Structure formats: C-alpha cells, structure tokens
Image (cartoon, rainbow, N blue to C red):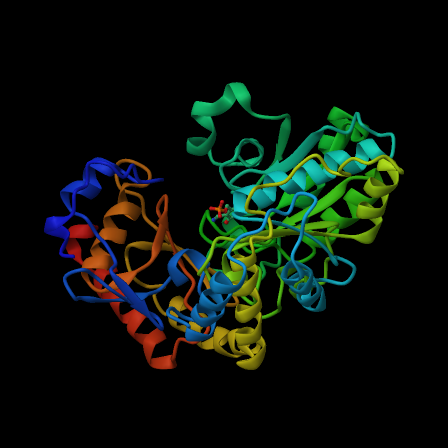
Length: 440
Ligand code: PMP
C-alpha cells in the first residue's frame, strides 16, 4: 500500500519521533536477501541486517516453510507444567554451539526479556546458595541491555534511564572502554584493559558480597560498536571469580556469528557464567530470545527447591519456548550450519572492515571502529547531540541504504550473505551521502 494511504493515527511507534515519522514516513513493504523494498517500489540496501537480526538475509524460504509447518502442527502450547518436544530439541541443538559449559537454556521472546530473566536467574542462584544479600548488579556506561526494568537499570544511556529513575534496581556502573587513544582502531584496541579494574574498585566500595553479577556486552553494540581492549574481558572474568560474582555476557547483537565465532565469548576466549541471545536466533523472523547458563547454576537452583512441588524459578512468559519460534530457530540454525555462515562472516570481515575504514578521510567522520561483521562510524556532532546521526540516517535511506543510527554514530552490520559488490555498494552510498556539503 502506498505510504499516502496509510492511516498513521493509531500505531504509536517505539523509539521513534512519531511526529517526524508521520511527516516523512520511511517504510518497508517487502524484503529479500540484503534488500528492502519501499511501498513506492524503491530498493533499499540493508546495511544493518534490520536491527542486527538477519545474518542469513531476508525472505529465507527454509525458515518460512518451517514456521508454516509448525503453525499447522502445534501452533501454541503453554510451557508452565506442560511442554512440547521441539523446545528440548532446540535447547539441545543450541548446546552444540554454545560456549563450553553453558548448556542450560531458558527461553523468552525478546532481548529485553532475556536480560531480565538472566538477572532473576542470578538472584535466585545466590539466594539458593544462602547469599541472598547479593542483590546489586554492575554494568557499564554506554551499555544497552534492553528496556524492561532490569535492563533499564543496567543501561548506561541517559535517555533510556532518565524518565524511569524511581523504579530502577540497584546497579553500579563501570566506565565504558572507549578512550581517545583508540580512535580509528580496527579490531581490538591495544590499550584500556585496566578499565576492568573499575569492577574491583566497585567491589571494594560497595562490598563484593552485595553484588550478584556484572553484565557487559562483549562488544558494546547499540552505542556504535565499541570493541573490548585486549585483555579487558579476561580481567573482568578474573575479578568476577575473585569476588564470587557471576559474569553475564549480553550477546543479543554479537551472538550467532557476528564476530566470526558463534558467540563473542568464544571469539575472545572468555566464558561467562550466563549469556543472553536473541535477534539472529531466528534470523529475525519470529521473536525469540534465550538465556544460557551452566549446570552449576541450574543445579544450585534446583537443589534449593528440594522435593517440594513448586517451580524452581518463579519466572516465565506465556510465549517462553513458543513452538513456532522454536521451529524458526531450528530452521535458522540449519541454514547457519549448511551455509557455514559463521565462517563466511569471518572470511568476509577483512574486506568489510577495509571498505568501512576507507571512509576515514571524510570530513564528517571522526572515528571508525569495527570487528567481525559490525562497525561503528562516529560522526562529527551538529549543534545538538544525535541530530547529525538522525539527519544522516534519513539521508542514507533516501539514497538507498538502511543503517541504524544511535546518537551520532552509524552502526553497519550487514548480512553474512552479502556479496563483495553489495558491500561496496553500501560503502559507496555512505561515502556519497557523508560527503554532501549540506550535511556538514
Ligand atoms: N541487549 C542488547 C545487547 C541489545 O543490543 C538489545 C537490542 N538491541 C537488547 C538487549 C534488547 O533486545 P530487544 O529489543 O529484543 O528487547
């Protein structure tokens, strides 16, 4: 349907300036491969895999067929005291690719739900071991962990917290890991590992025995790809172990091959105690997320429940392990395996990052960062923070490229099925638009 015929009165859009959107709507009507098509029939290259969701490209028939078949077989089942074999099959398949030891899987529907579920699992674990006073979390400035109240508390972005300060949980923030020295670093920065010592300082200040765990994105995604300095995640792991804290990696963006490994924890050889995933779990086709944790954590929680006939964890969602989502995830994992897409991400990454770092000399660009198949392009801010990012994002759309802007950073994260030519086309559009005088 052409945009002109759309009634904009009723849908309140998330994270959107609804007024501006209604004045100049930018919409998609169809998608295939690495392209969107607008209602007017214009083709838009997808430079951000939607929102980091579609490494296998859009319109995958294998996933669509599996979803349809599942809908016609078992469209819905509750998972409270009931079950369906498909969720156990999916958890087993995931265990094959998850980091060593993280083979207990709890399902939810969104990244935000996974984060809040992970927080509750951590709290329940400590309580089960008689350390219920460990109720505080540590996270990081510039972190994004979804928008439910747990994730809002963990968030390190002021706009996402400001309105909700009265209801957030007790979270202490470490510094983010970007430093001036790292400007224009491709891959892991050499400097900055000592920023992990913020965790030790927080343990000393607040009492380690009051802290349940520390949440980080291995690569901070939503802020515009901040890659961990060499040694940083290892140091966090060591400090967490020293003080009995759980280490939680939020891999909602980095999971499923974005770094070249199945999960970023594997890529950086640091294994967390708890891990969240979503988005690419179903190639974006059906909402689904998961929390993976260890047998040690699950066993402690199960043991505390004893023989009583009660749930070990008083938490779950109507759509936890939805059978249609499970079918989509299983079909997605087949595509990733059969097409060796994680290897392809690793193989494609040097060329992708080369193209992105080729934008270095544009006057608008003040920093570039990248790892695997994700990159951040930091733009010189306009009068108000975020204005430049928003203007450029809209101009890119008009020029035929969808990328996600966050503040004044652009996040480029193409599908792994993108061709060399398509990656070149993306960077050509970026160069053309970022070079325009009126956007300076
Ligand atoms: N955690 C991280 C690291 C994310 O990047 C996101 C979403 N971008 C979320 C959690 C929240 O996911 P959702 O929007 O599916 O709730």
